[in-house]
Length: 59
Image 1: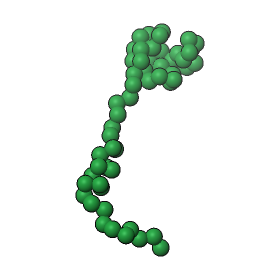
Image 2: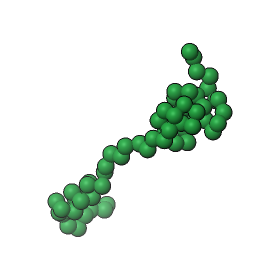
Image 3: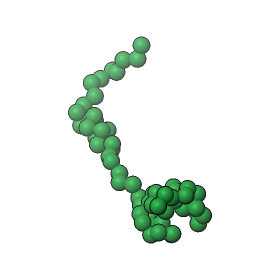
Image 4: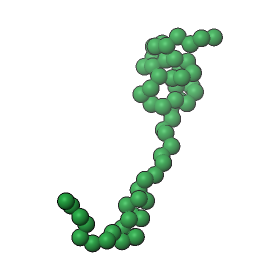
């Protein structure tokens, strides 16, 4: 069974866990309605993707 040879120091432990960051999603304006949306995804406001209507929005 694998067992650590030495105790992991607090500095090594904390520097390893310091890389877990929350990153805000990158939003780009929709070319149709100009509302912010995530890239490579369907626009939730107008239902367009890649210049064509994919989902018909209810009015």
